[in-house]
Length: 249
Image (cartoon, rainbow, N blue to C red):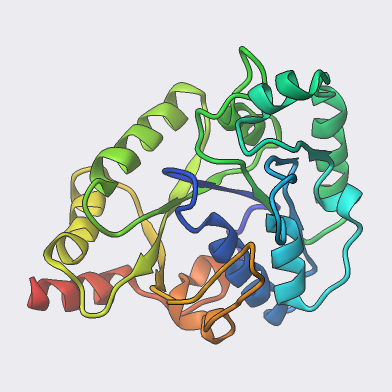
């Protein structure tokens, strides 16, 4: 874990792709490895909905107390982009204050996982996107992607946009990988590596019943070293994983 950045930005190819589950599992592994690990979600929308927010789910999973204003400093009611949700509520997002708050939070931990809201092109303002937050925080990103049909295009576009905004990408974590794997899921990982030159840093299995809003961990506690690369203290090998899939394809 000597090359692990002090802050890692967790984003996704789409909303609902599994960012929160991946963030929770990564945080648990890093704590297990002895690192003081912080998790922060600077922008949370959809607070009018019933159930747990992403930060609440993660800290409940970790079994750790949190001060919501510390780990989720900007909270907006409508389940939309921060830009549109703030406009509906008639409030101005104190962007510089939130960035400074997040930087201070990062400085107090060995490593901090910063969970984005939606994908990289989600607007916080007319000119400030979620990718810009990762750049301003000097936080290389992990892109969480689905395994099946559509993920090649979504991941490629995310990689392209990250490059346009000057963001560094550590690699991809595939979330919700099915067993047995369908043809798309079995062949997409190799394409991601070979065509788009992105490292596969982990694979989270499909966990039926996993429910962030409902607070159901459904097997997530069994996820650990086997699902994440040595960068995070895990034992996952992309080469072994791809070789296994090639025999099934």
